[in-house]
Length: 243
Image 1 (cartoon, helix red, strand yellow):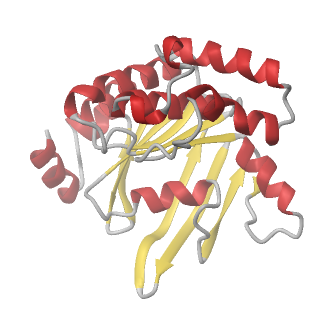
Image 2 (cartoon, rainbow, N blue to C red):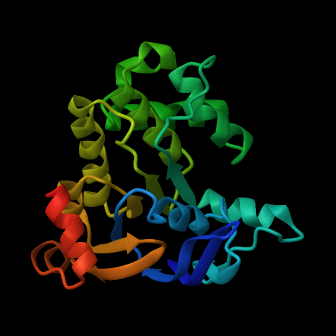
Image 3 (cartoon, one colour):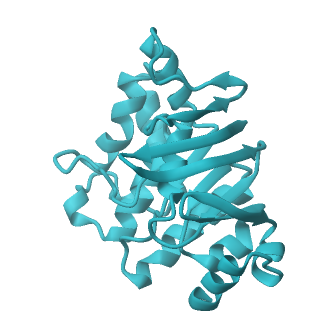
């Protein structure tokens, strides 16, 4: 479904990502781990064109992601296949939870208001927030806001979900409720690529784990390979500090 080929992304003289490649098959759950500043989030953002690499190519379902396409609708259609959940929730504070979920399906997908609301309520129930449809973001906890953000992404019926450290802005006791929703998505067969500091989640749910440092993928493998038999000295050092 996703192919990143020899991606290099620079910010000035800094190489945030250097010659990194990744293949993601349908139904896979890929976890990107590594220290802060290692290029994980930048690599993730290259998938849907939020960052444009100086070198390399990105393909979604065999089609090249081209941020400079003459027809911007091509990029929009490709992005519509991907849900993106950020560290911070990016909810519209002046709109209700239900409005936050229905706005994009109505305006972007052309879904009717009735159909959008029906789908939104189903997804709110799925993430355990059926009773919060009429609430506003300011009335929600951090964990509830992030679950709303996940439901909002799912309202677009994506084929792929991208998560950029979705629990890093949460209080520790709220992390579990968000991870539980993500585990439920994984059990349902959703293709997912996520940046995470939650090693237990990566170990339990991932089909493949990539370790990045200084913009490079230093090691990749199954959770068992990465956590029980790490080969690269830098990965061993990292795990000794976080496990």
